[in-house]
Length: 309
Image (tube, rainbow, N blue to C red; front, side, top):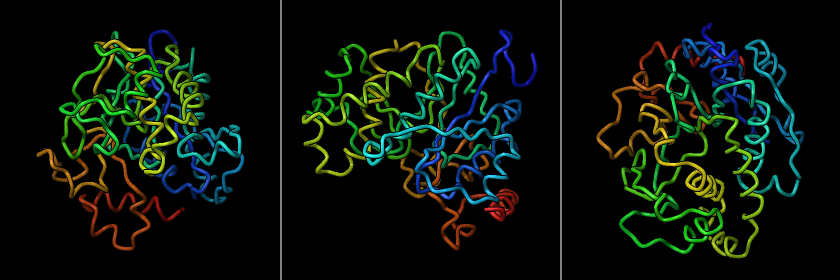
């Protein structure tokens, strides 16, 4: 068994993400570069990047660099009207990736392109009976506080997804530290492809997001933006027993854009302490190096990688 393979001849892990239509590819490039540089035994794992046909063309130098990093660029189709709904293209891409990974990889790792890997993420290689590795959402947002009655929005999610009350358990959000009903971050998930979670997520989302019982909530833009994440939470709860769920350590999926807002007492001294991080395009700010809680060595690495984008 080599650093990439498992004893059954399949890849241990495949990293996957979807390029948003408006992206210039900078975040995707940083993701791929960071996997190859810092993912340790998983650094040679396949990287699949899904691209919609209506996405803006990647700059040639970015595309060339992605290909040089052995990133597979995979086109996929999304109805133009459906693509206007927040994160629907990503949900469809996740389902496509899962189909491609079945029989090829033990674990499909679905990531937001705004992710960087800083250390070997071996927890993505799911152990034993674990069917999914996850992180809670960063902040409560549209989540349902465990100490409050179930609200109408989440009541509809549970009813439509088939979630029974005994599947619900307390979950602490990553940064604001509130205890909520299970609310999983949709941009940082490790799954076993043969369980078809991503395909169930896609099917549920497509069948639910236009229903009047949900559309009435969209007057508050947060519900439109995070509907995909609520549906994922319902689908996970309906399809997995508690002992199949693996909460990844808080060193995974840490939001560096919320560093100053971390109310948990677990804020790292610097992002070098973290395994994977999320960001919101820090590189667009001219003073990003001054703001980033990192040592010069990592900043220098990022600076060098940004030069090609």
